[in-house]
Image (cartoon, rainbow over all chains, first blue to last red; front, side, top):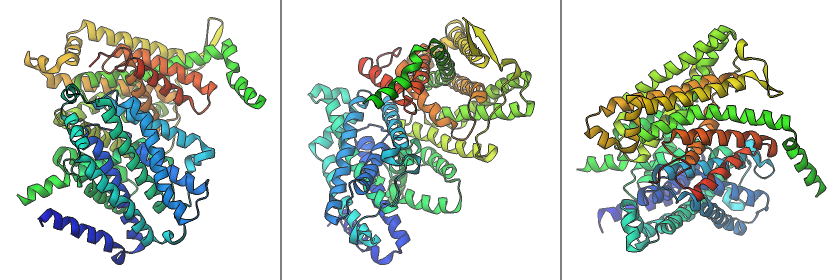
Length: 306
Length: 307
């Protein structure tokens, strides 16, 4: 067994044993970290592997969260078995929205792609804000609770873990499959890949939809631990979150974004607990990140090891 | 069914009323001119620096707050208003130069996500700094005496300030055309938009060009903010809708094209103004529909060049 494997097994053991040593407050934060880790990894599928800089990934996180909330509140999901189906439901709706947004967005690349995804996210934000009958408008949807036994934080933690771990593994398999290798080739030279006979746009669209679906799952998982969904989750500041997490962790490694998500969530909890000017600190952190440590935390660790 | 029909006829009745139609179109054109001031700067900066400036809306907002401060202090006098326009443009030009020299200059060769993140960080910082300096409340700026009231034209009565905005927009458009086509600086800007590496290889000091273009673009945003101050509520949330509309405009008009920015600004302005009456609360959907159509028909924008 090599060191990476031992590290992974230790991480897995830690994730399984975590609820034993945490207070409810930190358990909720652990659930948040799980959801955002999946969110950041799904985003990095687009940016790190596909070279598609989406500035509207929060759209799918938000759509997943709203779908989960609507299924629970309007469709009246009360049993655990029905609740299990809420998650694939959220993924399906997020994927469907991703098909539409992706259809338009993959027509452009680079900065244009970023602007398009951003614009569509803002469109969905408007919908969340204005379709008051459905979404509750500015007040959002509150009082969400997972049913039955899952309402206990430690049980919901395991429920979330049971969704996040297989999802992360599936994404890992995907990026190392022939599909994933083609995707990386696409990032480096789309023209050449096209000459080989790959349909670039449909390849990108599929990637976009897969990333959107997993972001939707992350959103739905997080909705039931925070207990609320707000239109702000779809707002434009939210679109920076997965980028910051991915860059903070390190986009060149598969699990880097997950590390970034963990550090980001804990930083946000600690800083916004003591000042209302969290955005200011966030801006300064991003600035340091971009100018001083562009390879992220994983880059720092690698440099430290050498 | 008849209820639905009533709803529609209620919302669409204005279409048959020439007075309402004319007033709303004029409001749309004047809003479009404000949008042009912002998106012209955005598109110029993108054309030369290849950086999408997310902070453009925030800088517009700072311009509006400067105009509010001076306007309130001068109590709505016309001299105070024109001074506010000049000060806002000047302060923003200086701020823009500082941002370009200390921050942007370091990341021109970095991947897109770093450029986006850096200008995004500026949005966060500017948003909180504005709250620290000017507070969290929405403020209203006094209308300058000279431009308040209404003017009669073509048998219709229009708010004078709206006509003034259109005049300023046309003036700036003409000025930019003159600048880009009749001055050495403008020729260098157009050359840099085409191929900045070649321009540098031919011996032009591109560093100075980048700084001045960024300062110019940001000054236009500041001027736009100051001009908007009397007709919007000036608050820390002002920048959001502005930057989104500006993005839609540059996508429709084509990145890097000032003419495209002008045409698309007017289009978005008018569509928004009509949409407010036709689909109250949902007019933004119409501008996105315009954008979607343009993307299908001409993905590089109306006046953009194909990559």
